[in-house]
Every structure is written in structure tokens, then in C-alpha cells.
Image (cartoon, rainbow, N blue to C red; front, side, top):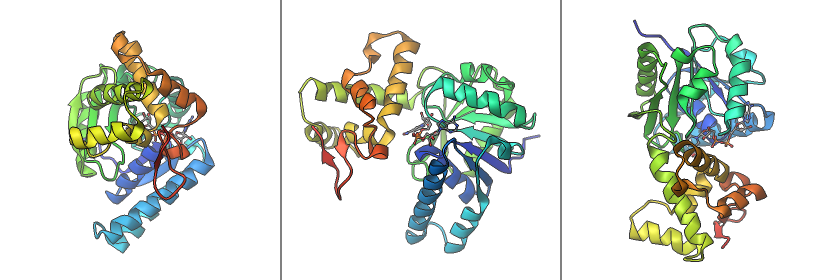
Length: 293
Ligand SMILES: NC(=O)c1ccc[n+]([C@@H]2O[C@H](COP(=O)([O-])OP(=O)(O)OC[C@H]3O[C@@H](n4cnc5c(N)ncnc54)[C@H](O)[C@@H]3O)[C@@H](O)[C@H]2O)c1
């Protein structure tokens, strides 16, 4: 017998968490969206609303479906409101200590049968699972950005993940209309194991003065047929997230080829995190993004 999922909790209302709440609500799940910051919950709900409006304009969903989806999402100031969730998807910042702290506060509140999933981009599912009271009911459900648009979800089992949990996660991914690729639990799984070293190399290419922001992005768009340049993509992902993933690869695989570019480190130290802070390799404060180097 499979597990029936009705209510989904989402922790972290940033760009990914709000996207996850959006697709869950459109698929008919009741959703509770929580974040440590009330402002982030508000901006997350505003971006869900804006994206739903866009879907109505593109005739992907009707007005009535938009209203119903919005009505299914409630905001949670604290984790108590997640206590009756069947599945909780943690999508807080890419920081292992923060994720562990969230689980230690959350797990005692959850139903014993509730499944806990993480949207981590790179951190070991087995290690995160081991820090909870339910490693057998813990799994990686790794969404792509922007969630309402990107088709893929990577599913990552930890060593202790039970078949029942895996089957429930597969059923969930089908229900929200995404395709899945199953990855083994290695640092950064598949997509980011391949993508992030390329982005890091693009930042080295900039750092070493081989090309400007614009020329590097143009080179990869027109020369390798990528839909967006690697520096544009880095800004889109968030430079803090890019750095965290490179650090996980560097430490987890103990290979110098994954060394984060010092320029990436410097940007993160400056708080230039890409689109979400209006500045990264491009400046987003005007009508069109302006390259900064
Ligand atoms: N950005 C991407 O392209 C991408 C893609 C796939 C997966 N991810 C993963 O998704 C997760 C979130 O990334 P994002 O891009 O949405 O980041 P983000 O910076 O947009 O959002 C992170 C959110 O976590 C919240 N947060 C921080 N500490 C918290 C806590 N203790 N409790 C609750 N909320 C807390 C922050 O307030 C913020 O709203 C990360 O694990 C990241 O690796 C990111």
C-alpha cells in the first residue's frame, strides 16, 4: 500500500521553496509555506501570485485554478503548523548546520509516518538523514530552478531510505507533472556535479581576464548553444548556492579540480549573490541587466 500524500509542508520561502509551494498547490495539494523570515514568506507568496498570473495569461491554467491554488497555500510563522503534513520538503539555505538545526526542531513535531525530503543541491542525503529521527523516511527531492518551468526533478535515496518512501516520492513527482532522474547519493548528485564545475570554470575565465562577463556568456550561448551564459546562470542560481555546492564538491570528492574560484568567494563575501540581491556578475537594478566586469 502506498502512502497517501495530502498536505505538503515547505520550509524556506526563497526562490526554490516558493516555486515548490506553487507547483504543489497547482497539483491540488494543501501547502503550508514556512520560513524563518516573515518578509521572505511575504515575498514568496507575492512571487507565487505573480507566476500564477503569468500562467493564466499564457492559458496554462484558468483564473479559477489560480484562485484555488492560492487558497490552498497557507503561511506558517512557526514549524508547529507543519505537524500534520504528510510530506515536508526542506528548501532552506544550502548550509548543512542550518538544515540539521531545522530537522532537530521539526522532527519532534511531525507525525511518525511523515516523510521528510530535502531540496539540497549537493549535501549528502545519507548524512542529513542520519541527523533526523527518520532516516528511512528521508529522501532527496531536488528541484530545478525555476520550479514551475523546469521539467526535471532528481530523486536521491540515502542509504537508509525505505522503498515505501522512494515510491511515495516517485508518486509525488508524477503528480506534480515533473520528469525524474534517479541519482546515487554522491556530492552534488548529477546535474550540479556536471553544471557547477562549468560555472566555476567560467568564473575562473573571468578572474584570469580571458574574457569579460559579456564575452564569456556570448561565447557559451552562441558557441556551445547554451540557452543562457554560465555567468548569467550563476546569478540566477544564486552565488552563495554556487559557492556552497563547489565547497561540497571540493571537500566531498577531495579533488583540487573543484576548488571554488576566489572571485566567486569574494562576490559572496561582498553580498553580491546574483539576481536575488540585484547584483552579481550583472547589475539588475535597471531595465536590462548590465555586466559588471
Ligand atoms: N537556486 C537554485 O538554483 C537551486 C536549485 C535547486 C536546489 N536549490 C536548493 O534549494 C535550497 C534553497 O535555495 P534557494 O535558491 O531557494 O535559496 P534562497 O536564498 O532564495 O532561499 C533560502 C530561504 O531559506 C530561508 N531560511 C534560512 N534559514 C532558515 C531556517 N532556519 N528556517 C527556515 N528558513 C530558513 C531564508 O530566509 C530564505 O528565504 C538550497 O538547499 C539550494 O541548494 C537551489
